Image (tube, rainbow, N blue to C red; front, side):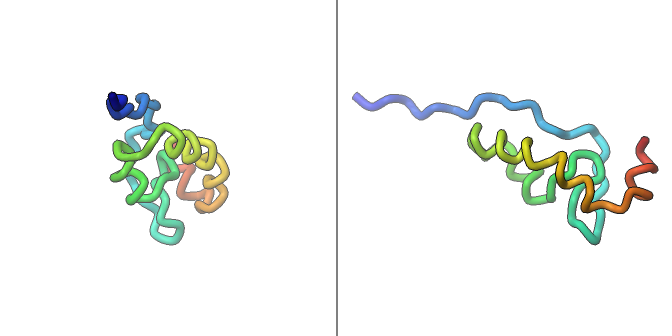
Length: 72
């Protein structure tokens, strides 16, 4: 008998309700994800979500600090 498909565990989204995409970097100024990553979040596996979450802090440096200062 086959095992039922395992659904991904809910991993808290990095969204902070600041949905503004920086043109030069292509990253959201709030969560540092791309539009494709934001749109595809629910379809990612646990491992893919965890990998992406680990990568996000390093993306901050790709955005002009003056733009980030607008949001605190």
